[in-house]
Amino acid sequence: MSAYGIHHVSAITKDIIENHDFFTQFLGHRLVKKTVNQDSPDMYHLFYSDYKGTPGTDVTFFEIGLAPKYTPGTNSISRTILRVPSVEAIEYFRERMEEQGVYHEGITDYFGETMMKFSDEEGQRFALLADPGYHDSEPYAGGGNIPEEYAITGIFGVELTVQYLKPMVQFLQMLGGEYDGDIDDADQARVRFGQDSVFVVESRTTNVEKQGYGSVHHFALRVKDETALAEILEQATAEKWRNSGIVDRHYFKALYISAVGNITVEISTDSPGFTIDEPLETLGEHLSLPPFLEENRDFIEMRLHPLN
Image 1: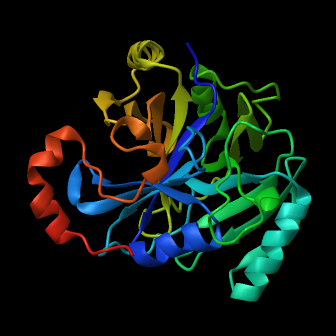
Image 2: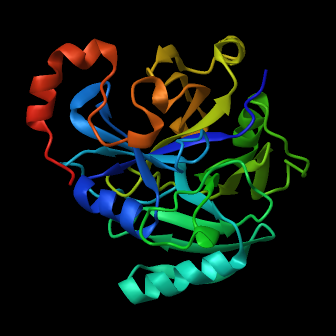
């Protein structure tokens, strides 16, 4: 069984208030889950996505207040690429960025696609990419007064920067990625997972990226169910990739693999989803905790500052 798309991207911020405002008011995402890092519940873990929390639309953030700023380099998840429905939508956001002082690099061509790179105040690297053929999400019309025809529709893919391209492409192929180029002579590659893509760029520098605020912690590919996840676990273990085994994250089951260059690649199930503990209409309005943390709710809430 193979992964068939992007599930989510998880990044690091040191200021969850500014991060929340940027995603909900400037980019127009919906906060669909307000929870904590299950491995370190003293920090927020926020999920921003389309209206329904559709797998493949959510960008998540851990708040690490004392984190240093990331140091850019190779062996990294170097950009999160968001999809919009048209080139006109990119133009709309370009004007919005110029009005509000958000850094962008202008509209350009990227692997044959129309794209605009930009970043938030922490230096988190994003891009908008025009993908008019995508209709599998429900854009959030209530965020930031953005016209629905320009709203972000999900995650198109991620860009990986690695010292050696070939082993990373082969790793992604093991997970079900499709690549039809010449792997031996390439210094960049586009590996497709269904409608989504992982772009791999080779950079032979010895400067390896150091994670911190402004960097991506990991990205996740999606599978239908736990049976498919178990098959990938079996294959990854057989090929001796270090991994976590299957972890229950309450909203999905996950497998974390330490891939080429120590980049963490997660494989996640589509279900059960964010409505397992909240109604669709009020997603993200209250602090959600997995059952094993519920008994510590009072202590956890005491240590978190209000978002609104």
